[in-house]
Image (cartoon, rainbow, N blue to C red; front, side, top):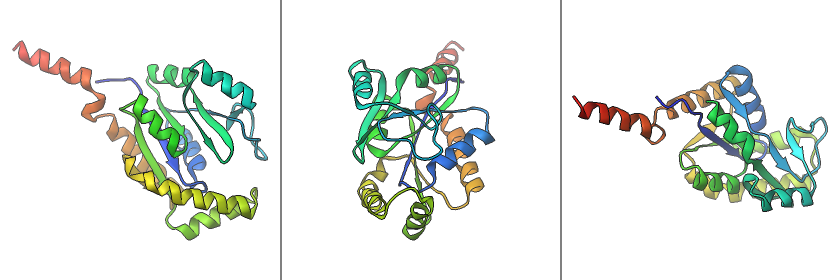
Amino acid sequence: MNHKGILIVVSGFSGAGKGTLMKQMVRSYENYALSISMTTREPRPGEEEGKEYFFVSKEEFEDKISKDGLIEYASYCDNYYGTPREYVERQLERGKDVILEIEIQGALKVRKKFPTALLLFVMPPSVAELKKRLEGRGTESQEVIKKRLRRACEEAEGIEEYDYIVINDELEECVREMHSLIRAAHYAPVRNGEFIEKMKKELGTL
């Protein structure tokens, strides 16, 4: 079988709990590597350089773009976000399943460059719960929360491009569900072309 890792793109409405889910996935299972995105936005309280994000200036980010050092990048709420290429490709070659937590524009760009990427969209159980989680952060103004909710409405238009929807109601259950989907994805024919061809070749010699 093909032991190369697969690329998993996780998107979802802001406040759906993507970050918490991803951290729990990495803690619960050994085979996942979280890709750290690069951004031009200011760090939130408690965020560390190189842990949640690589925080860079607009000039530094644009330099990366010009040198093709990013798998994807997009502008969201007046800031750049992007995925450094080198780290992702190195982890996949090592057999790690690499999780990219990115928004919808970036996800669709990744699917074009990596057709075998698995796209998962995380949703809260209801809109009321989404609003409650955003307000519970305590880090953003009502104006920013409203902007994120309006953005969620726009994002809903692209959900049909994803492979699976994951409802984040209870954390542990959601983590188990995501892990099962990813394990199953390893056995999809689209990700095992070499193995299938080898079997056909060997069968043809019998």
